[in-house]
Every structure is written in structure tokens, then in C-alpha cells.
Length: 396
Ligand SMILES: *Cc1c(COP(=O)(O)O)cnc(C)c1O
Image: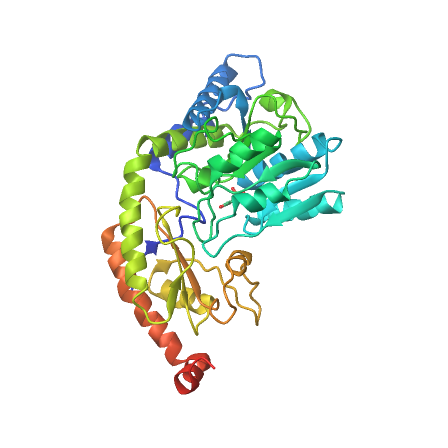
């Protein structure tokens, strides 16, 4: 192999676990293995570790420690919030409002709830991926029990007007859940100021371990349990605690929040340099907002006349790990529901590339990607019959 370079630009898919996080976790695999539910002193340390993690998580979002419940990741937190609220409140109503651009952990849960008698409204989004507050207001009926709108989108990075949504829901006495898996540890979050009733997070999206997440449940919110069994998590989520994971998510969120603003500013600069450079490629287009209300680390660009998948393969052979939200209509790929929802015409949406930046991303990385991507796009277009057609005939 001529190229040993590896540039990771897929932080929205997952992050590595930071060494400081791992080192706090390690003792809980070995010496500190006591079951927190046991009575002997060996278990006291593990109980204390969980308490500390809960404290750290709650502090990061301005909640009370008693309002934080650990889960097996972001998907479980999302499932719990939606199913838990739906089943516990079905006497009040059976209507749930969400958006067309949610993660599948939300969308597929909504499909399941629909099969169980709930009505779901999927709010549309504008061409930058934002819902409209007017649409939300108009969608609310006297049967509405829950609104679930993601804090920030995982494909195109759009940040929703969470505070305004929270205000409306609180006023109408409807529970407001947000899938904040992409936002926690990256954006400032205050569940009180934003009137959030339920919030999902996942450790591995902010340099903690995989397989551990948390659901914030505001005191007083009525929801059923999802995982039944023992009395762990104060009787609300059964199963012997993933202590090392819980310790990890606690340390990771504390670390992330300690330099949240400076990292946001650093990544925004790199992101904007990358966007500017990539948009110099002819027939390219940015998906999501240009700068305002966009996650600091998110870049999502379409290159006309080529396939997202083929860009990824060539980037990989150049040591670049990236991802695609491809709205390919023919062939084996599922269209990206997010790109379709922002109104991308199919013929333009063929070649979408998502590059997400994070803690180890440097300016050199950005420069290298800016050197490689245009070459890759050119090479693929040179082989593309669509491009050939376009050169001969133009757009029609
Ligand atoms: C990653 C992600 C999830 C799922 O989290 P897991 O920890 O992988 O279960 C849910 N929602 C969003 C927005 C995500 O980015």
C-alpha cells in the first residue's frame, strides 16, 4: 500500500473514546466489578461511580441528577421516550408529531406506534432542513400527547429552533422530546431554558464509549418503562448497570462541555474552509444551512453526475473515511429521506458526500481532503455516462 495516511471524517457516525475517558473506565472492568445492587462494601465504589456519572450528565444539560436515566445507547433512549410516553398517555390522546428528517430510531419507532393505534404527523422541512413553527402549531390537535423533534440532524447538520418548539409545547401542555444525540457535547443545551421534557443522548457521539446513552426525563413526566426486570435506575430501567460505560459517558460529557465553545469555534472555521473549497468543484451544492444553525463539524455536499458510494470507495483508497447520504433512486441504495425531505431533485442527489469533523481534525486534514476530493470527482465524472450526456446536451 502506497498510502498509510488515514483521515477520519465521520465523527457523526461515531467517535473514538478519549484516553482520559477510557482510563476512568478501566478499573470498573477489573477491581471495581461489584454489582451496585449488592450490599457488601465492594459494591459501594460502583454505586458511587454511577452517582457521579449521573451528576456529571445532569449538570451538562442543566437537569437534576434524579432526572437522568442511563440506557444502552441513543436508539434505546429514543424508543423509551416515544413508546414510554405513548403508552402511558394514551387515555389523553393518540397523536404524536415528529419530522420527516428524524433518525431511524425515531421514524421506525413511530411506524411501530402507528401499528399500535397511534397517529403520527411528520412535519416537513424547508430546503435547509428546518421545520416551521407555524406548521407545528397547525399540526397540534387536542389528541396530541407528544412532539419529538431532533436537536440537530445527523446528515445535514441543521439545528432546529428547539427553544421555540419547547415554548409552544409547554404552553399547550404537550410533552416535548428531542433526539439530541448529535448535539450533546457539541452545542450548549439547557433543558430548563429550552422547555425540554425528554432528551436522548449517546456516549459514542462525544468521545465516550458505544452502547451507553441516557434519557433525561423531566420530573413529573409520565412514561412507561421500556425494559422490565429488576429495580435498577430507580425502578425505571431494568438490568445490571453497564458501570464502565456509565462512568465513560459521565467523564466524556464533562470533558466535552469543558471546552465546548472553543472546540465549536475551531471546528466551524475548518468546516467553512472545507465547504468553501468543495463548492469550487463545478456542479456541487451544499446540503443544509450555509452557516447559521449548522453543526460545527458537519459538511454535506452533492456532486452532480456521480454516485455517493463511488466517491466513498475512492476516498477510502486515499485514506479518507467519509459517509454518504445518497438519494440514489436507481440501484440498490435506499434514498436518503433527509435529502428527499429538503427537496433535492433526484438527479442532483446522486452524489452526496458527508464529511464530519471532530477532535483530531486538523487544518492539514482539511487541506488534504480539498486536494483529493476534486480529483476523485473529476475521475468519476470522466467515467460517468450522465456527465458525458450533460456535456453533449446540457440540462435538457
Ligand atoms: C447515532 C444517532 C442515534 C442512535 O444512537 P445509537 O447510540 O447508535 O443507538 C440516534 N439519533 C441520532 C440523531 C444519531 O445521530
